[in-house]
Image (cartoon, rainbow, N blue to C red):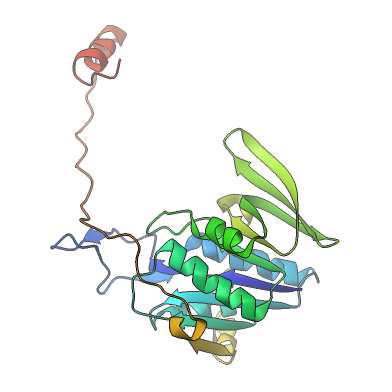
Length: 249
C-alpha cells in the first residue's frame, strides 16, 4: 500500500503573527517557519501505519516556494520515504492545491491520501474535501483514529456531538485532527538520513494545472484590541452590565 501525505510550510505556531504595513498580508520576513502541526500529525499517522506493516511507501508532497523543501525533509526525517515539491511563488489557494494534489495522485496512484484538517495560516479547512471531490473518492475528515483492513479504512471522526465511526473504501482522503496521535521527536540521525532521500521538484506547468488565484485579498488587519475586564459586586451588577453596556441580553 502506498500513502501520499500533503505537508505545508507555515509560520511557526509559537510566533506572534504581524501584519504588513501596507495591510497586503502577513509579514513572514525573518520569521521562523515550520510544518503545519496538523500535517505533522498526518505524517506521523502514515509512519505508524507503515511500522504496523500495513504500508510499503510514504510520499510527502508540498506545494509552494523553494523553502518548502525543508518541510518535506522534515517529513522524511519523521519517516516518509521520498518527497515531491510542486515549486511555485504564486499564491496558492485551497482549490489550486487540491488540483495540484489531484495531478500528483494521478501520477503516483496512492491507496490513501492523508492531510491535516486545516493549515494554521489560513484556517480554510477546504483542501482535503476539495481533493476528495475532484478525485471522486471517499473521504473522512477530522480523524481521531484510523484503522486499515480489507481494502477499507475504519475512521473515528471528531464531530460536534462527540465521536462518529465510519467505514470507507480505499482509495480515500483522510484529514487529521489533533487527537489522532502525538508526533514523534525528530532525531539528528534521521535528519541526516532525510538529506539522502529522493526529492523530485515539479512546476505547476508540468502538471498542466492553472494555479491563478480565484479570490483577491483586499486587506489584512489585526483584530481590535480587547478591553480589560472589570470586577462586579454581585449578580445584579453583572446582569445590568450585560444588558446595558454589552447589550448581549
